[in-house]
Length: 227
Image 1 (cartoon, rainbow, N blue to C red):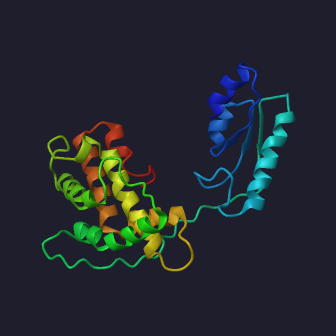
Image 2: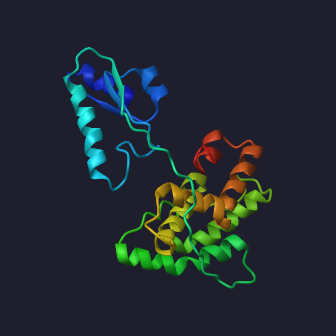
């Protein structure tokens, strides 16, 4: 967005960017930018806090009056990212013939179905639906165990899309399973990668693909970069 700001300004459109990463804003130097030291993905700060979000927007729009750019200011409040995993109790599937990850994925199916019915929508479906999650996990287990990523029958031949669907399936079910207050997005991410068999399987397959010399995007974007 900082780069696009220069393009829009060249066309005569005044801009102000909300910058989450200060080094990027300093390097690209957009005409006007407000940096917020907030968790990535939350450019307006705290979810569910309209007063704080309006303050961020007001400070950003106030920069439109500045013509002495590049202007880079920072919001005075810093919000630390929380990484504690949400608490979710996963029902057992009792399938003695299935791997732990596959059994786990079947165990949360009822929770996924309940939340989907209540919401009426789901974000699962890039290359597989909920029915395809157990089989996709089996393929990732094969890769983690040493099978060549080019030889396995991965849906869509797209590791990023498959892992996105698996993770989304789990995270939507977590909304139904979470204990306590509504789950924070980062807390649900931590739960998936740190507390579930599926998350561990995704990370193991990702590492195996890296060691096999798979192209960087194929394995890196299977999980957030810090994982």
